[in-house]
Image 1: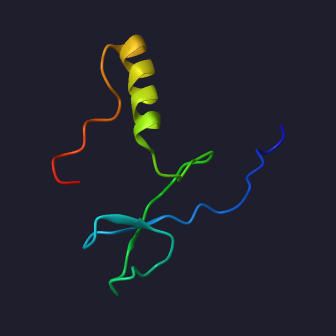
Image 2: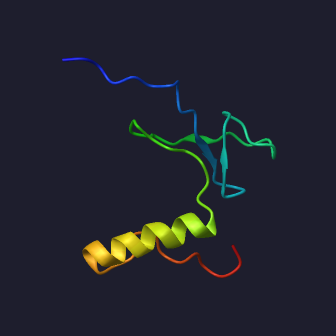
Length: 75
């Protein structure tokens, strides 16, 4: 059985102070970040409005519920 090919490490961290994704171990604010575990084949790109609508549309057709909840006000 062959092993899956990966294009490289997915280095994703999260700054809890700024509530933003970060690619390094330290945020621009100076605080250390938490590593986000990503299961291959992961995709760490941000989801834009079109992506979220598309994902929820498919999820609602298949499972009668959106997969990604609406963002809280102010984000």
